[in-house]
Image (cartoon, rainbow, N blue to C red; front, side):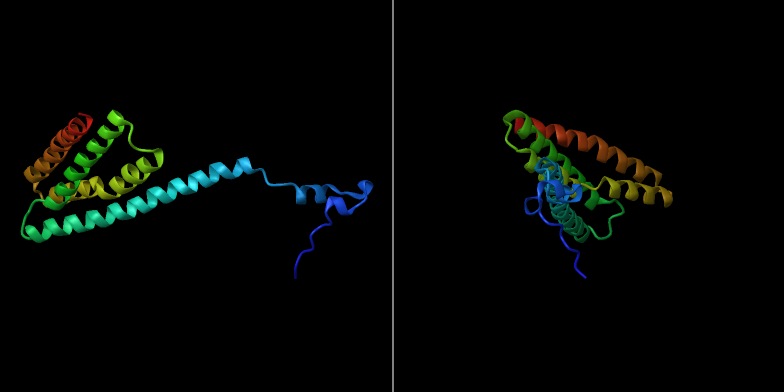
Amino acid sequence: MKANKPATPRDCPPDRVTRAQIDYYRPVDRSLRQPLKAAFVNAALVGSGGFIGAVFRYWLSGLALRAAPLAAFPYGTLAVNMLGCLLIGAGIGLADARQLFSLEFRLFAFVGVLGGFTTYSTFGFDTFELLRETEVARAALNVTVHVVLGVVMVWAGYTLAAR
C-alpha cells in the first residue's frame, strides 16, 4: 500500500498548512550531499586502486616464485616490497618537487594501488613462518633486508624523482 504524500503547502489555505507538509516538501540541504559524495568518490578511488595493486602483487609474487620455486627465502615478497618502496619514493618525490598530482590521483595511486601492492603484512607473516620453523638467521636477514633496503629504495626513488 502506497503512503499518501501530504498536500503541498501551496495547495492549502495558509491557516491549514501543517508542520508535516512544510518538512516533507523542504528542499534537501545540498551542502550535506557534497561531503558524502566526496567520501564515496575517495573510497572508490582507493578501493579500485587497491584492487589493481593487489592483482599486481599477486602477479609479481607468482613470477618470483616461478623463477625460484625451491628458494627458502621469500623473494617474491621482497621484490614486491622493494618495488613498492621505490615507486612510492619516486611518486612522493615527484609530487613534492613538481606538485604534479591531484589529491584524487594520490588517493588512487599511493593509498590504493601502492597500498594494495606493497605487502608488509605478508612480510610479517613470512618472517613469523621463518621463526616458527626455527630459521632465526633467515628471519633476521629477512627483516634486515626488507627494512634497510626498503629505506634505501625510498631514498633512491625520491632522489631520482626530485631532480
